Image 1 (cartoon, rainbow, N blue to C red):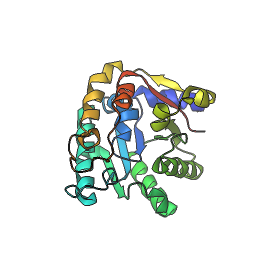
Image 2: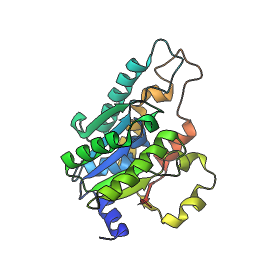
Image 3: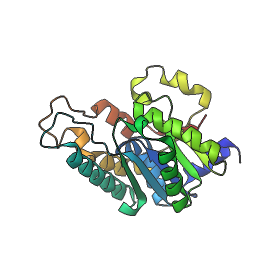
Image 4: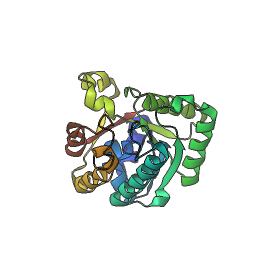
Length: 232
């Protein structure tokens, strides 16, 4: 099956998919509509690589272990809103912003195990255009996994690059991105994004320099169709 046909099948909801997310919320922002469609069809599974604990490093009320637990809880809530369950999540809990420090073979083995346990043929991974170090590492790991597993189909999704790269359309035109109409799933996706409350400035109050998702970024991913392409 060629890449375009495989991507069409993956977006149809008729075949089970796996979404690799560097952090809790990436899966909802970039793939919430896709996941909602998949949960209503053949099924989906999210593999979250890191624990998301680095978003508020100065907080004393929310130290890394507590924040990681909260972010996992938020991710499960988001998946439930999209039509999934807690069983549709594999949480690797690796250190946020330090994914590159973990032995690649260890992560690759965990990814392959999770994908195979779900019998997913289609794997969605962060676009290599995303500049965050964990997104870059996730894309690199997926590239290695693809060489090891020719039986799987790999597809890319953009997160940060779609928001902060003014040349995004030009830089990704060569991939011929395929839009997914998220209008039927927009309400669920919006509510799922809102479930990630720690990233929206609603939980951690003692770290004024902590991370908060820009409202413009939330609006972009709520209002616009999702974009995917065959992983280059």
